Length: 160
Image (cartoon, rainbow, N blue to C red):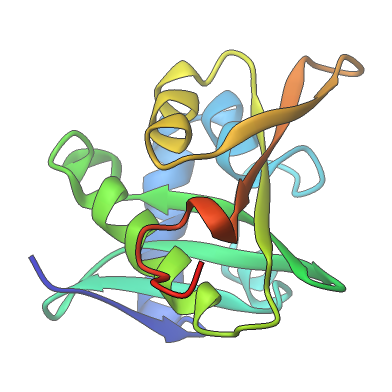
C-alpha cells in the first residue's frame, strides 16, 4: 500500500473533509479536531490550519494530519483523520507510520507528541501499537492524554 503526504490541502479535498466530518457530527469533529474549531467544519476553517498535510493512498485522498507545533526537538501532531468509510482497512496505521518516518527524517527531532481523548480508545490503541506512551493526563474540561513517541523507539531510525 503506497501512502504519501502532500503539505496543504486543495479546495476539493477540503470540501470532502468537511463532508466526512460534518456527516459524523459534532462529537466526532471534536474527537479529531479538538475543541478549538467550532462545528460544523468549513473550508474556511480548514484554510486557517498551518502545516496541514493531505494523505493519499496511490492517487486517492484519504485523510489529513497536522504538525500542530514544534517545541525545540519535539513535534506535536494532531488533527489526524482517515476517511470514515475507509477506517479499519489499515490506512491509519500506514499513514501514522509514514508520517512518523517523514518527521524523524529531521535528525533534530527527538520525539513526537499528540493529544487524544480518553473515550477515543481506538486511536489510543493505534498510538500505543506504534510506541506512543501516555506522558500526561489532562482531566479538564474532558479527560485526555498527552502521548509521546521517542526517537529511540522508532524502528525506522537505525541510528538509535
